[in-house]
Image (cartoon, rainbow, N blue to C red; front, side, top):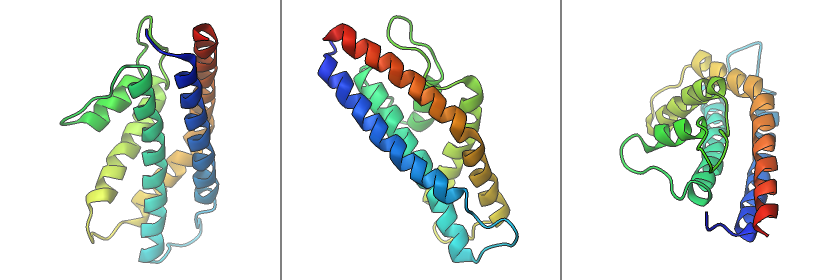
Length: 162
């Protein structure tokens, strides 16, 4: 495989640091207004938090692809292909990072992130934003568990490489 234990340990540290950031975003998202529709600027702020959540998660996936898979997809649909690859076992390389169910949920967030990133001035509908906030808060415990399981795999891999 050609990987050195130090590189894997660095990857573990990077993932842990990003997970701390995701924890903070999820904590902030869990407090979104539930009773009334927020002002448009607040809706945009919540949409950006959902955007930041997925972007942080994708940065973890990019590092895994770069360090473990020997590169991540490029070109058209690279973000979708990267996410799909995280739901696959790669024989003799690594287990799946996320489950098929998480893939489906995260793919919706990926699409929403794309919309937010490219929706220059388009008013965001609160109901649509709220749906994604609820999705993040709902799936995060399982996602964090899967990431922790993967960190266990990486730790064992680092130990075996010295």
